[in-house]
Length: 511
Image (cartoon, rainbow, N blue to C red; front, top):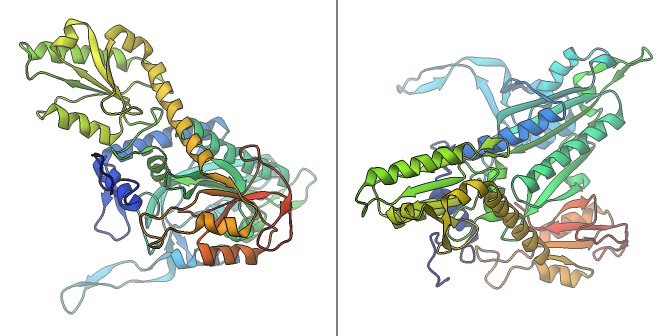
């Protein structure tokens, strides 16, 4: 067990899964709901999601997409139209069979009005949106059709973990229709790049762009592309996916149009999405044993000002100074919004107040007392530094440089995450080294197990190899990289089958 006193117990090293839950609790992000597998997202956590949503929504609209909304309920017959799609989601569907409740013989409520056709609570919307697209698309002049939806979905999960895998979660799903295969493929890759840009430049979370193997594709897709990130326990997190659907769903939903030669042809479609899973990824990328650490560009608030009045001769003067400082900071622009400031004037011990904000991950903490006011300065702490690493900063300098300080925190978090991934990414050429890399330590694959990291190893394309490695080690191919990882890009031999391999792929344990 760790002997260093920390705000979060257990620590990451002691019990990573429980540490994750405790960070969520300490930061007041969310809590479990009375409905099994669902969560209540609390204001601090929901503000974080709103900032994710706001930033991505702007990026989507900048690439020509518009928002719409489609029904939560999908007729079962719609899912049956695309065989791979229904097979992929069948076990996760929540199904509605009745539409009213009546009093039962024992006084309880029982379902009464049976539906003519069962309805599925939206697990994803390709089929219901496809039904509408088939009405909206008639001519090549209607294309491309670029639609995004912000919504909730339900997938009946057996094992849940807040933000990472819940029965109900929030997400966006983009759905587009194109006249040609080339245009649809271009859209698929454009949106993958939007996700990668957001992950790295807004979340401070480095990702590997890659293609999923056939066994890992979205059900019904021709090709699935992904961004994969390494968490601090060295497991991979699939942080976003973009799917080239070919004509599979347009045939299932009868999305046809007259092309420029007057021929009626099936359209080409795509879909792509990210979810509240990003909050879990952000936490596991940056948080430490003292709590949440927030990248400034997404933080619900950038600065907290804590007035120190218990020894002040004139407490009102301290409060007035803090309010004026907050007003001056709030007019400073920062990445599409103004600096957001909290003034914490709660009647509680100063140390407890400071630690509450450390655990919530706010980027900058300012303490202001009579001595600071006399020097026209503030006492500043940064969340990317240790709790005791605080320094006096002239008030004018703080206001003038606050954006630069926040950017320095943002850059520091991204570089730390990149360094962590580089440290735990290994080029592997033998089966023995591969197995050693991923074997759990003595004691089994429990909370203290080390998960290796990312292995860059060759693969011949044999699905049986994927299945065997997953069954024996719990390791999967996270992606076939679209570009060299750490500059490594070479042909070789698959260490499992002995067959030729055109390039290395990323293997890892994953969430």
